[in-house]
Length: 238
Image 1 (cartoon, helix red, strand yellow):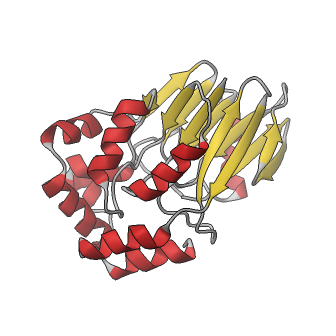
Image 2 (cartoon, helix red, strand yellow):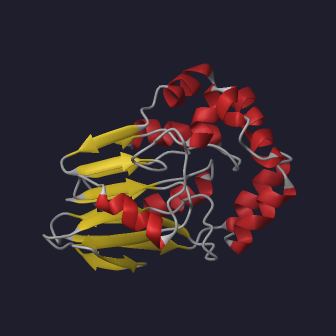
């Protein structure tokens, strides 16, 4: 069975549709949060996740839709987009987003948007030392995260950690911390969308990268008069 793990769609329905076409046959879809924010299609993306995700958790942009507490931590560009989302997202969809859990478990897997030890602090896990610390305290075989928009597969065996950017064969004596990257706004210098495939039959983890029509998304963002900074960064993957 293939499990598709995606994160940080950020209202980029063009990118999401491109990813979906590449999924092939699968058994489950997991959404790691930040369905909305930054992009031009929050309604379409919420609708897709609601209909298709078997497990979905809440991200910080999702949370900011529901509470000014989280909105206050955002920069002016992110705040502007969330306020637009509050105007155009129907109440029933906003209720769905606001009621999403911060974490979820399935089998020996754990799902959270930002970090497993303090899910609502929205702390980033990016440095090798922070990844190592997280893995050492991890009780699950695999923990899946997003938030940083930078995909990686971290493998811990004993006290040795390895970081991968493509495909890994799952080892019985290892634990894994997996960042799915971002469907809607990659930030690792590569503007291709990213998501992760867990193939339970082949016993592998793989980061998928795909090109999508960035210019189409940018045109829609301009029509909505979203901030130029957010429009331009899509092209550079930063």
